[in-house]
Length: 172
Image (tube, rainbow, N blue to C red):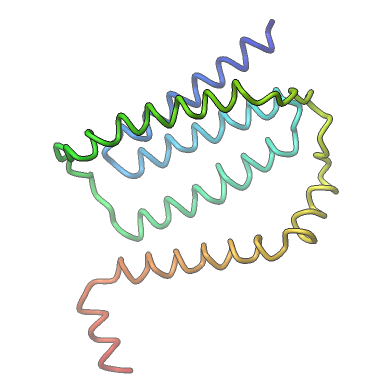
């Protein structure tokens, strides 16, 4: 019973953090809300018996990735976002699309007869995960790191004032 209460509590915290992430107008506050979501997900993983995944969730996502996000936000000097009324086309197609997509996902979940897997049955030992990550999935892992590097370089270029870009072009 306590397990179900804690699972529900972490789920509510996760959803509240995600909603707060969308509602915030300042990017730093949104990033901090994302840290709350990552922490709640780590709690969910702990309750599911995936201690290694929970630790990686905190260390990699709530730690390193969020520091990277906050670094890029600070580098871009992003201020408070201005709110607009939104698009009528987005409301016209977005809400019905969301409802149809949700109904489709619910229908697929009801129709599939996938048995639930008890916690701890799937391979989740750090040695197995390390072998998969650095042997079987090494190329996707490295491509992801290169994409993150390209995104950081793009943020630096976007953050540079226009006159410094022109100045560097004249020198080259």
